[in-house]
Structures are given as C-alpha cells and as structure tokens.
Length: 115
Picture 1 (cartoon, rainbow, N blue to C red):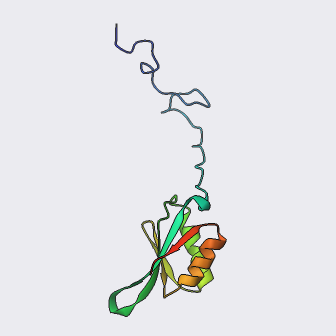
Picture 2 (spheres, rainbow, N blue to C red):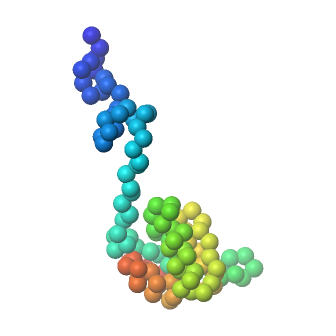
Picture 3 (cartoon, rainbow, N blue to C red):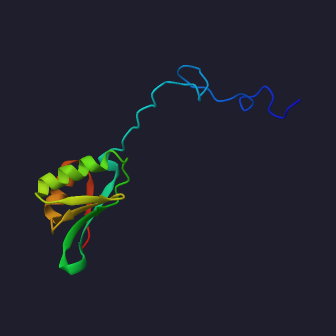
C-alpha cells in the first residue's frame, strides 16, 4: 500500500474544464485579469543621464508584459516624445512630468511625483 494511494495526490493532475490529463489538454489558458489602475501608484521622476540628457521615468507599475508597451505608446503620444521600456520602468525623453502625470491620472492611476 502506497502512502497517498486513493487520494488526489496519487492521481496525475487533470484539466478542470475538459477532464483530460494536463499534458494532453488542448483548452486555451484562462485570460489573466489585469489589476485596476486605481490599485497602483505610478512614481514619476526626472533623471539626468550621460551627456546631460534628461529622462522622465515612471516606476512602480507591476503590469503584465503585454500591458506596459500599450501604456508606453499612450504616454509617448501624449508627450510627443520618444521613449523606451526597461523591464518594468517606462522612460520618456525630456522633462515631461506634467504631461505624464496628467495622462496617468486620466487613465485612473494614482500618481506620486518625486522631486
């Protein structure tokens, strides 16, 4: 007699929707629910980089990977400037604090401006 014989731990895991083995399941993965913007605080700061370049940085957003590029596109369009995504940090060229703050607040995010 085995230790877990007859319990749920004795059987291989099965899909909850189609009851197939998880390895053989062809069901699409459940959609991930995004966090509401009101539950997150965006921290906005201006940083000086090499050769005197000024960059507006937005931190504190723990988003899914597919949501950050869309948010970056909205911020770049609102500021009329270029920008990049560095991990979970959004960077907009130039000192764009007020435009970024207004755009983020308009999207429903809580905003904290540093400096």
